[in-house]
Image (cartoon, rainbow, N blue to C red; front, top):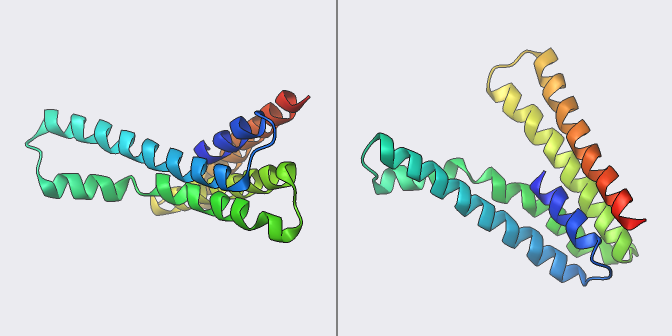
Length: 142
């Protein structure tokens, strides 16, 4: 959802170079990853002694935040080779982000031992949230 929000925000600013969008996606992913690691470590520090093992494992647990930014960034990077202009690049990156969002939600539900029904529900809820971001993009462009 973070990557989709970044694409929407960048797309409302007018024309932008694709490399700027790639850097914005990856940079935002890293900053949010660091913020999540810090928040988790702060909580862990209150619960028990903070060690390098706790720091490394927390950083690893939060890695999906960075991983979620990579596919939309790659899509934005290769989009010009598909003949897409700035708006096409933004829409492709947004679509890839939303597909990833639904995929990650479904995988997370599966790994948590959810039933197929709950996995579908997790995917559907994330799709609806993603579509709200798409509506925001459309509204801001007009």
